[in-house]
Length: 418
Image (cartoon, rainbow, N blue to C red; front, top):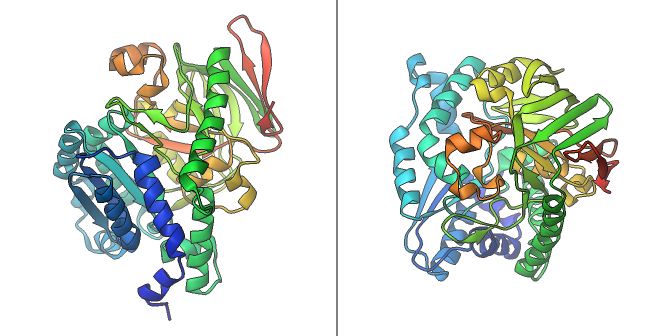
């Protein structure tokens, strides 16, 4: 017997949930008076959606429009939908979102769905549906990835997700534990969460400014199963914490965040690297990833678990085998210290240094908001329908910065800033 949704809501600290909603609006989005908000969320996250809407309207929002997804409806498609339907997606919806973003609407996504929801479904249908959705999503994604607008992602502890992270616990206990883990990672477990984020952003900006001052040409990773040189894009810029979007609003896109990140050169990655944490993707846990790069492209890939899904991902398009992001995270980050595997990239990527296959961020270039897609490509930026982060850092990984003249400088030692 499962707990009633009402009793599960009671397992979540209402004060901290309200703080998270406030932080999403005031720190994550920095929503401006008169600005519309487009919000996506799983049905289970309705309590957080309502609180965010309240704080948004208190901040002067124009119109708050939520869109919901439901796990049972999603499963019904895979179990009863016509085969040809898996090559389609709701392009009309994403075109509408793109028009909203063109009109300066902000975007907020709440994650909390079961990461393994589709683990028992036909992997071919899952791959087809995700590819169709990725293609249809492009009009809206361009506005988000290009940082045209202020946007933010936060998390809500749904029962299905909580039972995955805390198996064997009673429903209300699992939800309560996941909620507390989310609140701690999101820095809303103290009395002044906005002040806590101000201090955290300052620390991330100090790392970002140091890296931008060094102007490294490449990073070299060494450790068990890893000997990798990642060339950095010409004119790359490191970012971290709060950043200014093209509409002039400074926001924190990810809550939580522990990373400083930039754009690698899509054609200047050499060597081999092994994952240090599992990757949850499309309902499959991919573990023990080992890949080898030549001239920026993955030419050999294997995994001890989920290898079939990994190879389907790599075959999405030409850019799927190249890197679009490189991010540095201290092994001592709060999420790493928690010892939890969240099965969710928003959290797991902030436990370790990571790289991302696929699309790069235009904002990670000097004067990136003025560059054309052709100029970004010429400077080494990658283009793809996907953007998938996976973790390669640990307390056994060293990272050196390589200057243009070949000089080396320690950046991280045993997973910590050097």
